[in-house]
Length: 408
Image (cartoon, rainbow, N blue to C red; front, side, top):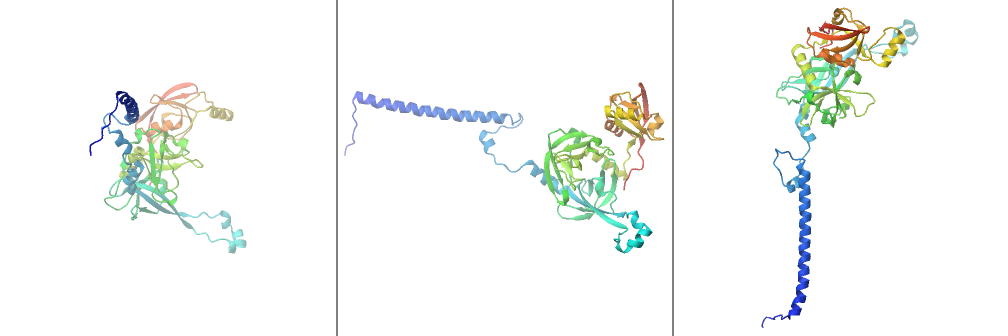
């Protein structure tokens, strides 16, 4: 059978060519459209990712960036890295029981003695806190209030092992303590630099809040350099880190970490009735105190011997009404009391003096005076400029040492 041939006249051939031409143009147009959309999508993707990549990094194709699988997050990595070095601390102390004086009255006991409850002379108080391991041989950093006055300290590691802890020293002014357990090859934390913290960077807290072991919370650094007077613990000499990572009772002494898993602070305080506000001792400060506690069992703090308040319109008005002091200055730090025989007393400071500057640095609040004194070596001379009865005086104080600080 012969192949069939299709014979077309010139007019028929022309009529067939037009639809084919139109169809080719349509297909070509669709191809350009699809190709243009693909090119636009790719260039848009490159524009987005170019802001993420650093110049030193090797560029990846958009497909690699978009479809690369996620293996975890930095919080998980930090917890895996640091978690084994965070410990639980259980402390118990024996305290004398305070019996109401009425119960000791012979007349009262004569008529109600048989109905009075038996009150023991002593009772045991127990508390729980956190800590983290500084060295492989078992030195642990925690808060002073966790182990202060403790007769027995038990340390529990994340792997379940328990050890009896020995308190090497406590410092009440900074709320720092060091304890020691007899162990070797322990996991340790890595110290960061709390002097370089930036507000807004990540913060991770690990500890044992409310007895819930190995609890992790996250947040950010909300502020740095919070004065102890602002936090409500005016007797402490610490500039606190503020964070919104949840900190609850039992977190005390646990580490505050950055995104790299480095310790930047030691969790220590919360403000009652506040939400999303917690405080930590900067690790640079805690480490400095810990070194002295390990070496000497105590810490020597610089000392002037004054009580002071910030000058405000309200303070000036109250002093004027009470006729105790007539303060002329509108700003500065007012000295309200000078301790006898203290360095301040020996240098000639008096109640009513207003400290305007220390080492030519202007002052506005007592916290700044505390900071300046704390940074001064004991025995060194500190130059002050004070205002007394409207006159400016330049005084020099030889910094002394604060006595009778509690330590183990």
